[in-house]
Amino acid sequence: MTRSKELTNMIVFALVMLAAFTLYMSSRPKPAASTQTFVYQEVRAQKAATRVAVQAETAPIALPEKPASVTVPVIPPRVISEVLPEYPASALEKGTEGVVLVQAYIGASGKPEKVEVKTSSGNAELDSAAVSAVSQWIFSPASQSSAAVASWFEVPVRFNLK
Image (cartoon, rainbow, N blue to C red; front, side, top):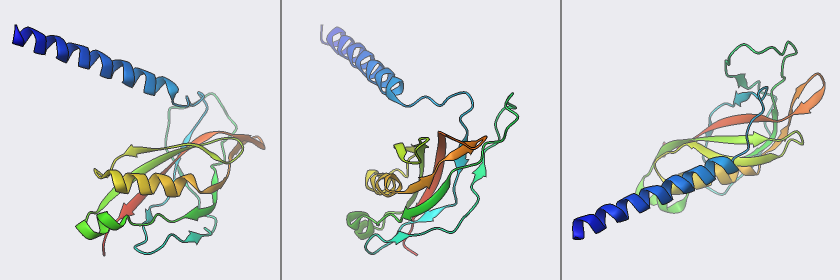
């Protein structure tokens, strides 16, 4: 009787988790067929208070994608200013290091509409600090034929104690 109850509980748990995952995936912004993803240079976390750095024009690298029927190139978004992430104090004390790959959905307005962890560092505090910093960045949106377009933008954020 106990084994059957445990099996039933496990099945119910699996179904609840599947439903939650499906709901989460359906709430994420869906990039249009022509939406491209751009990758930014690596950003390093600060051990002291967060500083705002104005970034010189750095050309992000467009990820290769399947050939599209669109002949007009998409000009990648530019970072106008970035907030460098602050190293979480408890992670600093424990000597925790890692790299977080953050992805941001930059709307046609240039504001990050959705910022999330694409690849975790394995530490929730480091992940949260990276997302918090990138959420405050200011962008010039991607453009195509002089019209602003939404795009995905990825930023690797490195936390190391060196």
